[in-house]
Every structure is written in structure tokens, then in C-alpha cells.
Length: 248
Image 1: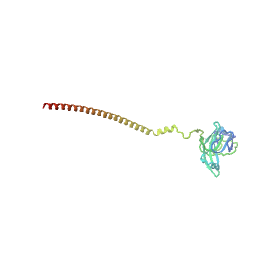
Image 2: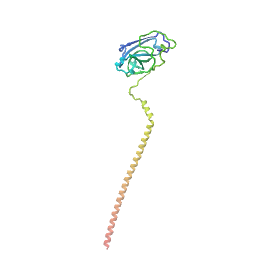
Image 3: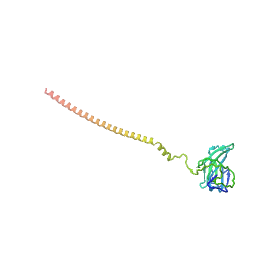
Image 4: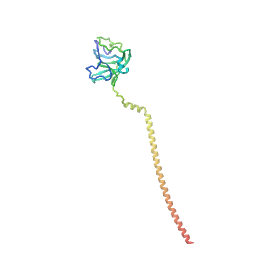
């Protein structure tokens, strides 16, 4: 552990439960290896961070058909009655146990369990300096503000992120339009040109059809006039022929 100020008369007790402690309202979902309760005295007020190493029996992991990368430490949020996932790193193994590591910034009830849908408190990997035990004896620290000089200098990000699975964000849509803006603009221009050419073609087709109709009417009128004049000429010729016959 490391602290912002010197800590004196520090005490810590870690209690281990095989089932949910009776004082908790909400049971951790999924397969749970152990529940823990970490109680401290003269630590929380000045605590900067604490590195905890967890050991999980290999037989339990195999019996429950779990992935070693899916085992995490979860902290109980008493105000909301929910379990919050703490970023947990798989470190090593031996013949009997898998070893994991997490960084804490406060103490409460915890559960070592399989990963399920939960809010995540992110933290970086670090070197452990204590394991599950009973009581940490009273001690005092020097001006280095650290209870254990073996703890690496890492900080825990205590902000959570609530990201619904499968969601589609507006940022992705905006990024899509931004990345494809040139193609979209070009497609729009091409579509506009096609529409413009089609409008002009339709206009000329209408003009040609009207001209064909007008020409047809003109030809029909000329034919009727010519036919009428032809009949008139024929009648005049017949009259002249009859006059000529009578005369001779």
C-alpha cells in the first residue's frame, strides 16, 4: 500500500466467505470463488492505492469450465447495492493456483468471480505486496508515505464507463460521413447531372413529338387541299371536254 501522508497504527483484517455475507443485499451473479471483507483502521483516510494479489484454485476454475482471463475482482457498492468490476490482471500460475492482481483505492466487500456484464473500474497492472491473510500488525511509515516499498508506482483510474453492448453511437455515424464525404459529394453531383440530362432529354422528346404532330397536321391539310384542287381541275376539264364535243 502507499499513502498520501504518513500512516501510524495501521491495522487490516481480511475475512473470507464461501458464500454471500448475510449483511449484503445483492449476491454476485455468475460463478463466485470467494467473498472477501477487508476491514482497516487508520488507513482509508490517507490511502493512495493498495495492490492486492489473489490466488484461485485451478480445480475450481476447471470444474466450472471458466477461462482464466475471465476471472476478476469485484467490489460491492453499498450505496447502489451492486457489484462493480475492478480491473484485474492475470499474473502467473503454479501446480495448484492461478494468481491475479488488482489495484484498490478503498476497502469494502469484494468477490472473486467470473466476469459478467458489469461496470468496470479500470486500473493498471502492478506488483503485489500482500496476500489474503488475517491481521496486519500495527506499524508506522517514514516520510516516503508508503506502507510497502515493493509496491510499484501506479495509479488507479476510479471512473467507470457504462457502454451498452451492441450500441450504435452518433460519433461512429459522424465519422462515417466524415471519412466518406468526398464519395458522397461526388455521388450527389453525378446524380444531379444525370437528373439534369434526363430533364433536357425529356424536354426535347416532347418538342420532337409536338413537331411530328404539327408536321402530320400540315401534311394532312396539304393533302386535303391538293385533293380538293385536283377534283376541281377534273370537273373543269370535264366541262371543257363536253363543250368541245358539242361544238364539233
